[in-house]
Amino acid sequence: RVLDALLPESAESHGLLALMLLHDSRRETRLDAAGDLVLLDDQDRASWDRAKINEGIAVLDEALLLYAPGPYQVQAAISALHAEAPTPDETDWTQIAMLYDTLAVMMPSPVVEVNRAVATAMAENPSVGLAMLHRIEGIEDYYPYHAARADLLRRTNQREAASDAYERALDLCHNNTERAFLRRRLDEMLNRNG
Image 1 (cartoon, helix red, strand yellow):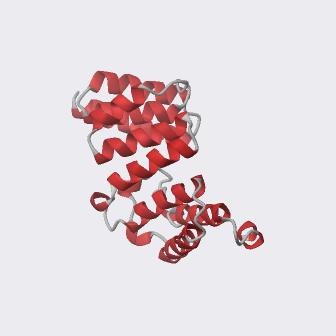
Image 2 (tube, helix red, strand yellow):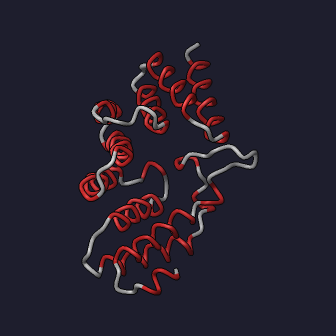
């Protein structure tokens, strides 16, 4: 807020504030009572902070009126689409994938490419997302890449490859909460098909 107040004509400072508000609106629902990670699709949307969502969207609208697009605004727009979807099934994945296409041009990085592949998988199908993931270079030590790959492999019934990808993600992940989540996903997949 301080930065945004100091730079009232900066579309990107507005974009950053919007992004922070939108992300923070879901803070209380990211972990369950036991401290386990809760995926976006499984979060209680009624518990999201609507005041922060509304403020974030209003700040994003102000940013867009300055006609100086930038990566923070694009990321805030992606967060806004998630926040505005009443249910996971109503998420506008096509628009989110297009925004990631834009972000990949503005801020090319392997991390953006992983998110772009996941969004495209949701908008189209897991096989398309997997093909995109396989083209990303220089990401072998980034555990979210392997976690995303594992999930898409699981969804395309490539269980053995998915298991290997979950194991690689577990090897690279150092956050205990995220490790527990990955272990749970792997165990669920193995038990379902065991």
